[in-house]
Image (tube, rainbow, N blue to C red; front, side, top):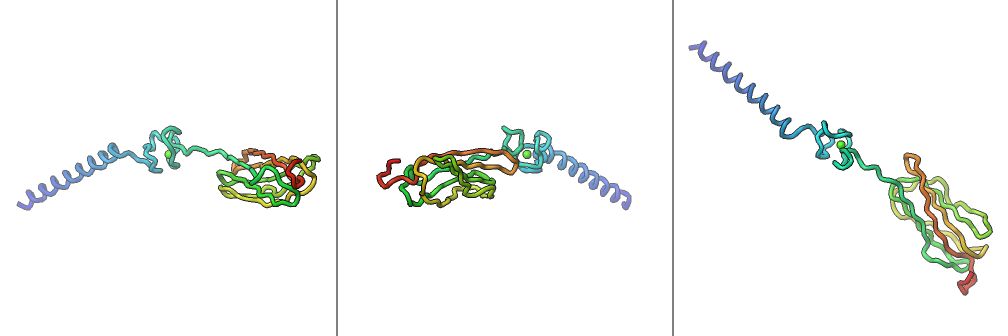
Length: 162
Ligand SMILES: [Ca+2]
């Protein structure tokens, strides 16, 4: 009787072990390992530890830096406040320079880190009267450099013509 009971237990233990093995193998077939949980199984994922779309082989899409610069008006009379707007779509080191009609330049700020968004810089409309060009230089964390330009007139007589 005792021997029979032991054999019976062994059978049960074996059955449980085999079921467990099938369960583990089954789980792997039904839901293969996806470490970064981007929906692409690790064995088909070029970047198994970084989430990314299937179209990019499961790797994150690298965004490229875009910068813009503009002012609140096109023409400023002498003494008027100029609001310069500038924007960047990701962390970037920015340099803002203005070129005057007499070919001199002034740098408002240089290699300054800005988070993504739209920012403002206040300047004043002074001599020499005429057209000036803003240059916004942006450098991203990988060292890629992009530029944006904007032209406006300042230092003009109150008539607005210069
Ligand atoms: Ca991935």
